[in-house]
Amino acid sequence: MTSITAKEQDSGGFRDVFAEDDVHQIQYKTLSWQAVSFLMIAEIVSNGILSLPSSLAVVGIVPAVILIVFLGIFGLYTAKLLIDFKLNHPNVHTMGDAGYIMFGPVAREVLAFGTVAFAVFGSGSGLLSSQQALSTLSNQGMCSMYLVIITGAVAFLISLPRTLDRLAWMGLLSAAVITLAGFVAMVGAGVNPVPGRSLTVTASSNFLDAFLAVTNPVFFILISEMHRPEDAMKAAWCLQGFATVFYAVFSIVMYVYIGNTAAFAIALPNFLFSSGLYVHTAAKLVFVRIFRHSEHVYSHTLFGWTVWTLLCFAGVAIATILAIAVPIFSYLIGIAAALFAAWYTYGLAGFFWLHDAYHLKGGVDGLKQRPVGTTIAVLTIIAGLLFVSLGLMYQ
Image 1 (cartoon, rainbow, N blue to C red):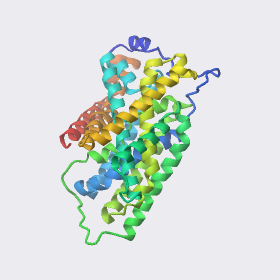
Image 2 (cartoon, helix red, strand yellow):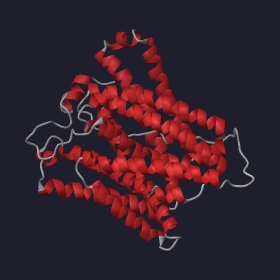
Image 3 (cartoon, rainbow, N blue to C red):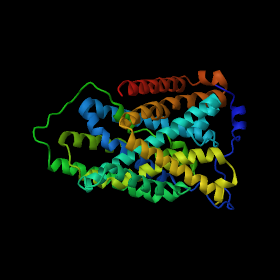
Image 4 (tube, one colour):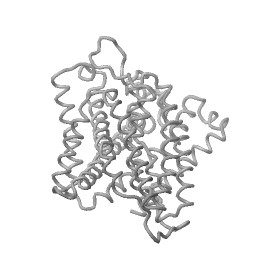
């Protein structure tokens, strides 16, 4: 691990990534923890709500529910480690910044690329889900390629606001929509169950979809725009509590009864919003990396808006092309999630704790004085490696 002093100085010291100044035309630190909760629910739950019932079909009810609950709790713990690292290093905006502090410039580029790649792939996944929902609504009445392009245009417009607080109200609406869609699906499944349904209590297969549904590699970006970053743990509690309970109930009901497609169409606004939000976070990472602490970040400059718009357009364009032109895109999404989302959510969290315990708590002696925390952090890293290996193995 590298010296914290050198790394902090080179990346702007302990200066917050977004300065608060009343003269700034664009104010970033405006999100409440409630708004962050809605944004994360809208971004993450739409991924899990479609994949988890099929995960139960291959894993079995009992193992899948145990995994959902365990990984929800585990995700809450790793979120605490991430939040503590962010509070100790206010200049961290992305996983790339965190990687630079811990491991140096190469890690910054690798982790930043991984965040952008995952966000673009997540956007493409949302576009595909939106296309499928529109196809359901139109009774397959329009070419799938055109539907993806249309949904991409909507996602581009959603991604354009410069600050996340402009998207917060859509996050609330999106979270409400995906919740409603889940309940409609469960009611429809209960009213019209599939006759002769055969259930599997346990089965041997991968559980990649089950744990990818509770990952969030862009949490740093959301925390950076909170008015009180100290409240980020409240948002994490809200997300993991909601996601764990909702996933468990929804996946069991849908697996047992197999619901209809009406809820899929209802969830369309959430798919569009999550796609736009992923593009926004990818563009924000690159934009802040280029213009950090410059006038283009805080003022409505022509050059700043031009670059921002081009970044959003590029993100949507790449996601759209991947969704349309790559036949194995769904497999690539799984690989990207296994490589980046799982590792960022679980594995790196252990390094966060070890780094700060070493550099802020007295070096090796600081680690020795905290044997429980050190052991759990090491086990967290090992678990992250296991998740990545299993995710890649079963793709």
